[in-house]
Image (cartoon, rainbow, N blue to C red; front, top):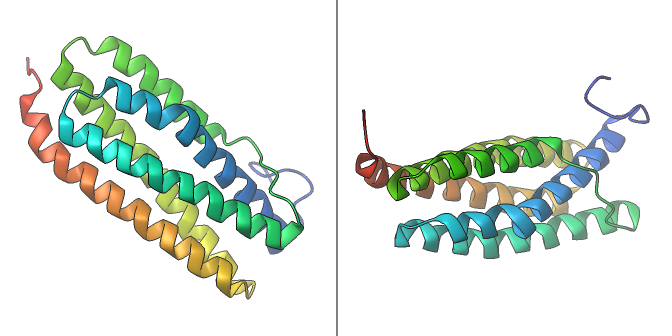
Length: 169
């Protein structure tokens, strides 16, 4: 199947695999991504947005764990390489941005990239939950999806203010 493990033979197994990746993704964001973004942000509104989303992301971990516990009796996770790559790329870009305004621009772009990935993941998972008759999970995933969309909109709004502060050649 390419990007999925060999033991994925049906939609339920695929759903479980992707939930495990979503759990790992959220944990990477909570444990590494957002704390570093908060530490490196200089704009007070941006720092506040990242702090608020960190709290939401902790709830996202809890929701995905609850869904996995109900689905398979445990909340194992599977490495999300996409999130790991986005975090690593952001770390490099932040180190390279010497100007504080440019660093905030880098952080907003990185945040949007992560949000877009999460929007795709949670939209897909929500749809699969609906198809599988997992109504409670679908509602939890929809709530998370709405929060990710809101975070993306907030970052885009901040970008309109902060991008103009960055140096241009």
